[in-house]
Structures are given as C-alpha cells and as structure tokens.
Image (tube, rainbow, N blue to C red; front, side, top):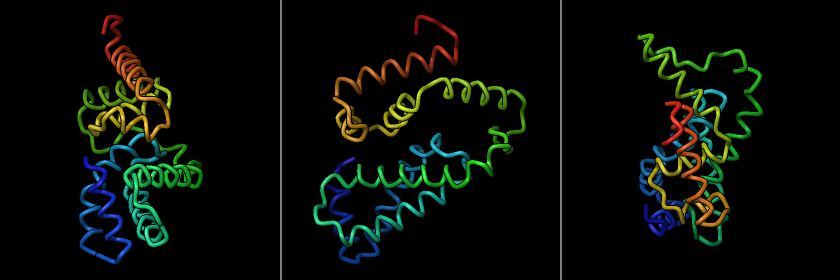
Length: 174
C-alpha cells in the first residue's frame, strides 16, 4: 500500500472531496476489519468502530496541517476507538460466548475454538504484529506503527508465528 496515496486521499477529504472519502473507505475498511478483529470484546462492534474511525478522520482531517503518514494515523484512531468501545461495552459482552453462532458443524466450532485458544495464548503485541503481516504491511511500516525498530519487528513476528503454530498444532519444530 502506497502511503503517499493515502496521504493524498486524506488531503482531498480535508478539502471536502466526497469521492475521496469513498476511495479511502473502500481501501482502508478491509485493513481496519482485520486489524480490529481481535481487539474488540465483540466482533459485532467492528463496523461501529470503523464508522466512528472514519467520522473522526473526516472531522480531524480539516484541522490536520501535515498530511504525512496518514495510514498510521488512521490505524491509531481505530486502535484508540476500539479501546474506548472495549471500556464501554466490556461488561455487556462478558457473558457472551466467543464462538460465532453461524457455524453449524461441530468440527468447525472445534477448529475455531483451537484457533481462538492459540490466539489467546499470544500477547497483544504478538497478535498485533501477526495481523499487520496478514495485511501485507512491510516490517518498516509495522515498526513505524508499533514504535519499535525494524529488526525488532522481524524478531517479534517470527517469535509470534512460531508461538501461534506451536499452540495450534502442538509441534516444537515449527
């Protein structure tokens, strides 16, 4: 993903271009969905957080002076919005099951439970870096978002990948 492209789109949004907003939404929505998937107390809140994120982007883009690294800026807004939603809705969703009710087969439920168990064994940084790599971000982009060095992001990714695979498949030599 070209950061300059995102920067230009946000600048156009600040200038009042509605078509630019549609382009940004279509470009960033799948990325934000993947990013937010394990950050919220309920998967059903993802669209609400994304919508609030884009409302804040529209509102804040008008006061933004520099249009540099808008991609990271949008990710940060989504992360902070998700934290606020978690505080607000955590009690409401505490008793709710984490298994998606749309699964019919017991094997799919068991597989989902295995994946959720493997994910829950990871720290928040380990989950975060795996999501970023799933979104095809470079280690340089990841290190900028997570505020760590590029080599640290590579080590953390490899450690996280191995830990996830070990939790999921129970093999030591992955």
